[in-house]
Length: 114
Length: 115
Image (cartoon, rainbow over all chains, first blue to last red; front, side, top):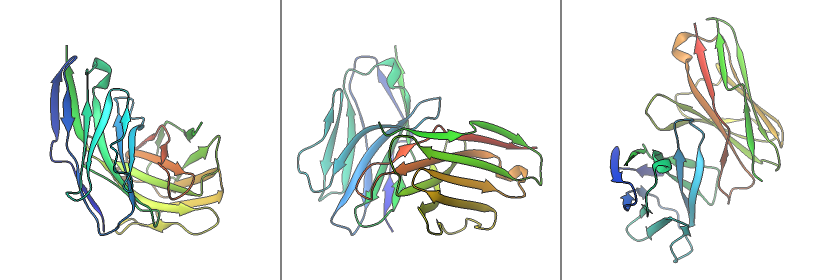
């Protein structure tokens, strides 16, 4: 079974600075999808960014970008120019391309200091 | 697009009663819906995966007779917590995906409190 590991329970960043959240995963599948979701205090899960495993180019969405290292099974999220509204729990997720399996990491709580 | 509506957002019920939570995909057909349970300050724990028109697939350790899941149409899945007890109090979240190759979109979640 696939597993997703987020080794940073908590992270803190100064407003306007850059922070990187780590995620590693374990799988024997060759095709899959990776996601970062944000869960603010409202608890609504919001998709931040997605990456297809077959794509070598790292995904980017405005201030959010990923560093996808397929061989190392690493999928980190970089948040540039951090804003107070970025404070939330961030979950890394893996979804199989072959079935409906979708797994989440334990989450990283990001605090943004003004 | 890709809006998932979950209802109710909060529910309080008496111990021994049953509670139904609805998850609707408003602007797309969801071939698959996922039900998660989330404890405070923890990650999402997958309870079951349901495909339209077939029986749900439950994760190990999840009581299928207690957590009844129905996915009768491509836009609606329901989770019924039967004979609820205080230990069932939790935050339940549904998500829906168009196909196996897309991201899942989440409902707003339901805070269940059993008293």
